[in-house]
Amino acid sequence: MASHRDIAARFAQEAGKLNAQLLRARSGNVLVSPFDDRDLCSYGTHFVLARIMLDEHGHRSWWLLNGDTYSVSTSGHQRLVREECGKTVLPVLIVPFSCLREARIDRDTITPIDIQDESFETVTHYAHEWDSVPEHAHYSARLLPDGRYEWHTYRHWLGASLFRAAYTVREAGEYRTRTAYFLSAFDEQETRPHYFLCELPHGAAPASVGEAFEALKPPEVKRAETDGLTCTRQGDVFAVPTTLTTRQVSRLAHKRQRGVHVLHLSHTATEVAVTDDGTTYARGILRHAPPGHGRQPEHKRQPMGDRKTWHRLVKNTVPLDERGDSRAWSRGGNVD
Image (tube, rainbow, N blue to C red; front, side, top):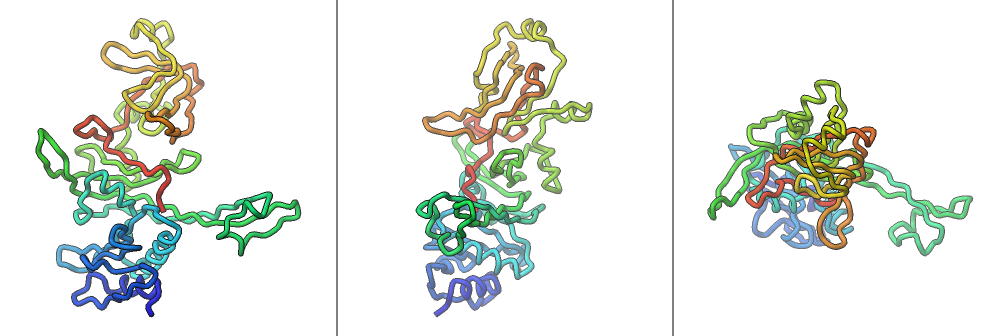
């Protein structure tokens, strides 16, 4: 009977070839999709683990792997697939398929531009009581001299990537197809790196992940950094330091408010002043305050400079959709 690895290994070596010799056995619910030989699935076709991508000549070109987390057992399947696809030496792009769906991206139109290496992290855990040690760690947990139990887990981090793809958008009641560049990456300034997928602004054509991050900076931020100023960022909000005094800000904006949302986004600032033309100034601390009952902040607090200097707030360059929402998506850490 074929094992999980047998099926994954044969798929990695054969998928996409003419008359591919794939293992059709269903062992541990790792299976080749009965509807598309280019897909390998976990526990049914609802969760695609990997898809072999072909070039314009129909030859095997690169791998598209699903970065979503589903279950402990599916994570094990994903680990096997990463290992076996990696042995083929073909490029491997890992991105959460749930984000691709939300972005309405056609997976078969994706063209990788730059793919950074994935990484792995060892996480050490402690518990004071044996009952607090999870069952999966019973075989590896060890008792320390201080009476605590210690065990380790391993965290996989997706490599950042830049790709071009077509997506569907609704305009004036009709569905149209557009093409854009997308950045799949983690916000590394968070305590726990925060995954996001975003569309880059129209006209941007970066050649690397680094250039893609630069493309997300609005002109005001780039000018300030060129002048040697340090800008603050929280999520999609940038704070650019100014030389304005409180009296000058009061003349520009007749009303100052405390703790209100800024730029029609899920962020607040300690003290905010908005001019008649919509220019927003703030000082103090940026806080993430997402709408909806029970939603927790996804970004840590960010002090703006010395907290006394007034900053001009500007949004990043991610385009807006037909509803006025940013074309950026997050899984809140729910990625493999």
